[in-house]
Image (tube, rainbow over all chains, first blue to last red; front, side):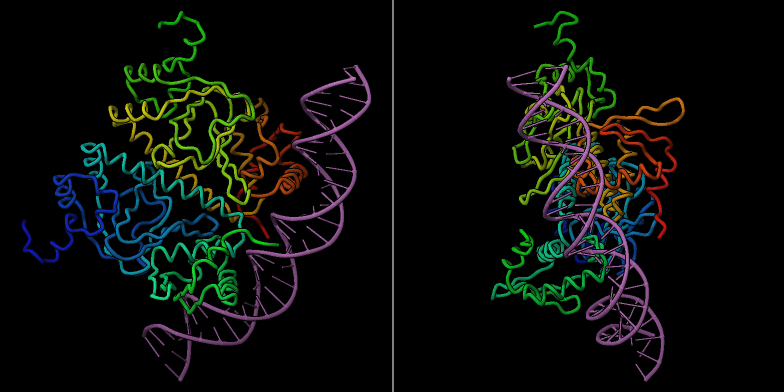
Length: 242
Length: 242
DNA sequence: CGGGGGTTTGAGTCCGTTCAAAATACGTGG
DNA sequence: CCACGTATTTTGAACGGACTCAAACCCCCG
């Protein structure tokens, strides 16, 4: 049952997981980490695969070790929105775990993703023996709710402002800062995805993006984005003059 | 320190609170209810008064005993949205309690409201000695997040659909069903408030409302609303034919 | 090299906004 | 109880941003 150091399984031990410090799990004890290790599954999802499906019953929690996933929600008329992106260290599925019922959205791997799956019963066990964990997830849920409500307020703003916001948010997650202060990143998103993130259509995303490019705020090539300077783009998210 | 039965203070004891069964507090023990009773404050807010302000630091939790309050969020450009209505039995302020920081929205009494205020430190104490309570609030937060995400999907629908949804939701909360199957209610909301709930302008609300009235789906007189039959209105929230 | 999906551009239309004015309800003081 | 002033509600007309539909373009991959 013990793995040789450096073996494949050894690499995917929660204890070694670099993401643990910033995840919701940072507070649990050594014993519980061992428990987690015994009961979790580790899976690889290739780009395009579903990690879970909207409408499925809750299977447990999903902890992303590496890769990027999109959380997408669809209604019966076929409208689709992209609620958020999840990357390494993010835990998925806890909303449904706590509220009960079925997943309200699907998780889809945008790149190859390595994911740990923690079965529902194991989460139950961890939670009952570790009250601080519930508090930790309550904080997480509260902060998700905060950004959801923040997002609602932005819905009334113009597409240009919303896309500027999006670019700055993507920069936070994927961007690298060059020596001259400019930012560069590659997004794992199609135009359709970006449209679903800001609540508009792909055509409008394109038009707005090239408009921003024409104004010199960003430079765009396929999925590669450069922001030469932050301030002008931040200004674009502010007051719009008539 | 003991109050005569029937005294004013006696009437506002948590133990007697009719809302307790359906509130987040339903699970706590008798001792803890007594604790709650000793440490809570009971206040009356008249219509128009703020219960708390967006930007204020978290003072604790607010438990509405009677009356209706609006949770409103404003950005620095002056845009205002009405996130939700809270009525008797609802607890307010727990999002901020768990996430920390400052209130992300204001709570404003739309009618006279009687409210219990539970100071932060008392909530801390209750939570630490009662792990099930944290779980209870996690469920609440998860369910709030669910409806927030559900609401996001609706943002892309037409105003007519969104207002039809709103009317049906208001019916759930305020409506009374007549013998002939029709529903009647008075909303504590101005047109401005309704506009802020569906993310549009008062003028558009009015036009849509009178459009629905012309189609015989509802009948409206100031703040009094009659829904003669539910089904046609439910249909109006569904697929729109081109 | 030849599909095929994603991307880009174009033109027309419509829904909702904006600005403005009229009508109606409401509170206040005479 | 009525007159008045103010705020809210309602109606009107014009504008504009984003959507729709459609065609052209361009990568990527077989």
